[in-house]
Image (tube, rainbow, N blue to C red; front, side, top):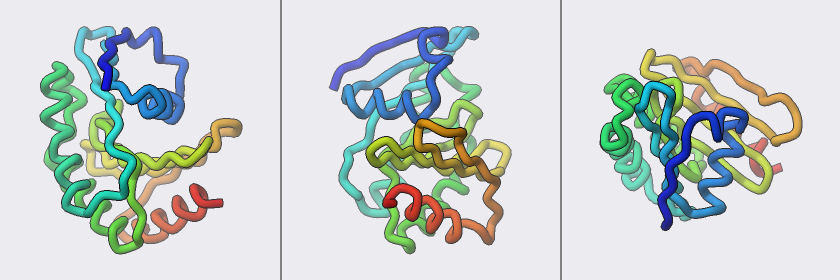
Length: 164
C-alpha cells in the first residue's frame, strides 16, 4: 500500500464518495492536510466482509490514526465511537458490512459502503447525531438523519440502494 499527502485544496471539490473510491482504487493511505495544518488520514480497509469484532476494532483504531496525523479536532470522541459500535451491531444483525471506515470530516466515524458507482455511508458524529446518505455519483446525494429507532430501516435502505 502506498502513502500520499495532499493539501485540502487538491481534494476540496471531490465528494467523499469520489475521494473514498480513489483511495480504494489506488490502495493508498491518503493524508489530507487542512488549512489549519492538521490532517485527516483516509485508508481502505480489506474488501472482505469481516466479522463484527473486526469492524469494531477498525472503528476503535480510527482515533489512533487521526491522532497520529495531528487531526485532534477531527478525532472521533467517545460518543461517536459508542454510536458507531451500536450501528455496527445493527449492521451485523442485518447482514450488511461496510467496505471501509474513515474519520468523518465533521468529527466522528463514517461507515462507508461502495459498490460499483454507488456510495452510501452512516456517519456517527461527535455530537451524537447520526446521518446517512446515498449517492449514485450523478444526481444529488440523498441525506437523512437517523434516530435511535431508525437504524434497521437505514440498513435496509442502504442495502437496497447498493444492491439494485
